[in-house]
Length: 45
Image 1: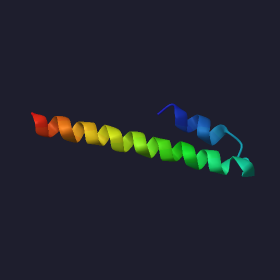
Image 2: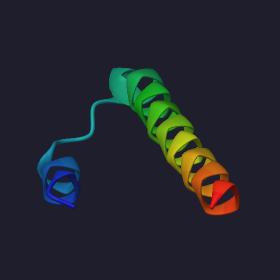
Image 3: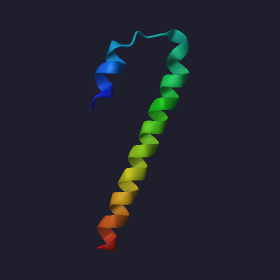
């Protein structure tokens, strides 16, 4: 959870919103991937 203070400390740039959205999209993809791995591991045992 070390990234949250860095996100809050960064100044908001109007032209930076598309890159921010893409970054959050990657975070969501990674979270879904981890949940899928846990799901498979849970039902394999």
